[in-house]
Every structure is written in C-alpha cells, then in structure tokens.
Image (cartoon, rainbow, N blue to C red):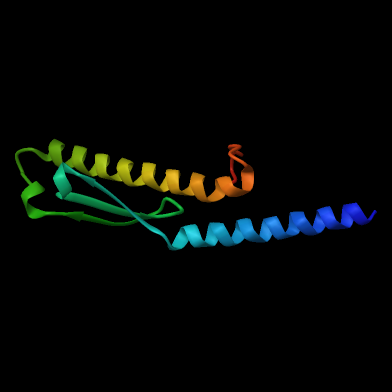
Length: 103
C-alpha cells in the first residue's frame, strides 16, 4: 500500500511538471523564414502564429504566387521548429514515446 501511495505521488508530481512545461512552451517564440529573410513568421510553442512580417521587396504585384509560396514556406519552417522544441521539451516526460494528443 505504501508503494502505491509513493507511485501516486510520483505520478502527480510528473503531471504537474508536464503542465508547467506545456505552459512554458506557450511563452517561447519560434521564428521561421523564407526567401533569405524577406518573409518572417513567428509562432509560439503551442504552434499558434503570432506574427507575419513581409519586407516590401517580397511584394511583386505581377508575381503573387511567389509571395504566397514564401509565406507558406516560412509558416512551415516555424511550425517544424516549434514541433521539434515541443518534442524535445515534452520528451523528458515520455521517454521519447510519441503520445498522441499530449503535445
């Protein structure tokens, strides 16, 4: 019975640490870029887009598709980096197991 109580305390402590790590992820800012920095996207650790900056030289009214591609590339770059950071941070608790819906 004593082992069960200890185990429950450890589980509760791990849950608290995981929740704190999740909160901290939300405060991180991750940046993705495209076109040598003419498009920059910032996301937080929860993969929510915070800002998109487009330099004037990226805007060509005759080539809107290029700008769309640059924005898409920058967003994907930022999201990939955010995912890597989340996996690294939360991997401490899961031992490298990918638990769907956890983060």
